[in-house]
Image (cartoon, rainbow, N blue to C red; front, side):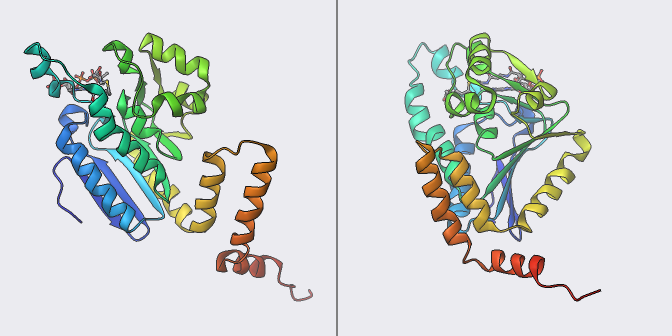
Length: 259
Ligand code: T3D
């Protein structure tokens, strides 16, 4: 695939892997890296995998925005326009990851801070190493949550916990993230990649159409029970015509030879 410097994108059948690759900076995000992520998304959108694994190289998952990128302007007394940074880079990145028609697994191998939490939250399933941490670094540097965190974090852990974390710039360890429902499962650091691959393989053995439908139904909350029931009916109607469903019913329910 395309040669990148700050990320890696690999593909193995229906499984793609997007690896943040600035380990010396705990994979903090800089402009060229965001541009590479946009190119990676072009490729993923053109040919969506069934499962995308999002992870980080080295001991960190992603430390959020690289603050040294903002330093020269601030040190020179110049204004920084963070709204533009968000609308031009972070917002499209988060929007496009959320819209990918595939299952996203985040394998959080180490610290996720600031916008790094936002990236992890684009995943449908978050696995984490036992020593991973989630740090709401925004507050520590005098910012509010961004990269979709204000939307996705309360949904995962509840608005009170999300607000307390945002106000305090607090961090939670992997066990707390598991207890609060942010993380699906914890693994020893050395086992995380293998456990992620095992989950990805289990997913690609399932129906991609059913997974897309589940994602759509559960992520885009219907405004009422009636609306949800109508959407479920439309989904099942389509899924009932798939080869996967028909083969599964035939395999399960075919009359067994008399014993
Ligand atoms: O600007 C905009 O566009 C607005 C968008 C904002 C979104 C955001 O993400 S705001 C939040 C930005 N992130 C942070 O504030 C996190 C800053 N980092 C930390 O607090 C700590 O590094 C960690 C808690 C994440 C990890 O601590 P630790 O002790 O495990 O590692 P470390 O030694 O601090 O970091 C290792 C290296 O990575 C170190 O470099 P060095 O000294 O070895 O050369 C450190 O400076 C570097 N690093 C870590 N995070 C960042 C970073 N460098 C630049 N920017 C970072 N965010």
